[in-house]
Amino acid sequence: MANTMRWRYGDTNPVMLPVAADVAVEIGDLVYLAEGMARPASALANQGSSVLNLSGFHDAFVGVAMQASPVGTASSIRIATSGAFEFDCDSATHGLGDFISVGINLAGDQLIDQKVADAASVGVAIGRCAKQVTVAATRVLVDVVSTVMKGGPQEAA
Image (spheres, rainbow, N blue to C red):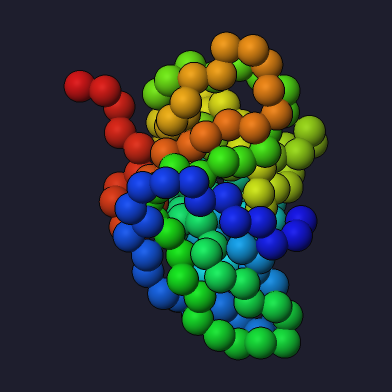
């Protein structure tokens, strides 16, 4: 997917993380922390099931890439750990506050860098729907919450 600035509003509370020279990160990628480096969602090795893949990503979720790092360049990039971002999704409706997870392919074995989906539970969520979608649409506004920096989305009290 091409570099796409997905940020719409809100404090981004950025952090800087290095990216390995053999890894490409694009603006708008959902990224996780592995061995002290930022990696795009699609770089997560298959954990054996869709639930384990989503959960593994959730547990190491840092945020949304605000800068790109092409292959062949070892650099640090800015990553937003919070804020409202507009992501692609499969055509669906979304209620305000619904949990949202990183997108995954139909086989359940590959995460998608710049796509999201409804989350089955808080244990796989990376944020919440920030604008209700009552007519099925292929974009959703997500209030992103980094698990690494902020503990991730929380259950309502």
